[in-house]
Length: 246
Ligand SMILES: [Zn+2]
Image 1 (tube, rainbow, N blue to C red):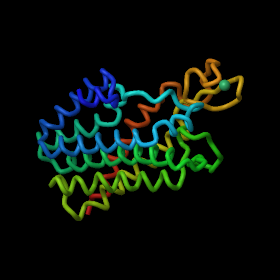
Image 2: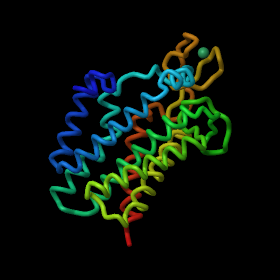
Image 3: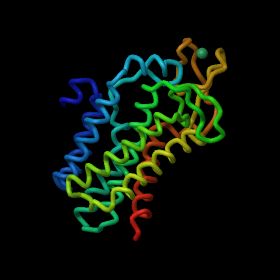
């Protein structure tokens, strides 16, 4: 309710966050604390320089608004389900998968927010062609550094909360980075992109900032940004399991 009051969550986002939070709290308070810490850090990062970032992505992204239920599930669903499964089954693989999923979500969020704030011209992760700020698949060095920091932050927080051993920090942070890179690769290849016929520019907006309705241009029409985020948390979860094999 507090997050909704300050505009970080929409009503559907608040309902979804309550469900994701309740599932995590059922798994145990350290899991809930990790989720809340991630959420607060991500929300604060989104707020910093939000006017500037909105200006930079005016042509490519829909006007920034409170996170919706779909966005909350796409980022936190794999984490919450794996955390609960870890507690119910006491299997290490689920615990590690949950942490990898959250590290991947942090890497993606931090990379986006730090990258947009730094304002360097992004290049496509595949091929290196220049792309407009905010367009999925575009990367910058400051953004990439932000993504690594986000993954490391989740790994260290998990260790601090007793959810992981101190020797596992590199595997967890690495899994987050792998998930973040996976997010950008999917964003550059199969994610749906739209095109404004008047301006001849790529965008993720249904209506371009010039006022013209955009049309589907490339990628799979059903592969939205939320679907890519969900897949990226799966990649982070799988990578954490693989990187944790001694
Ligand atoms: Zn246009």
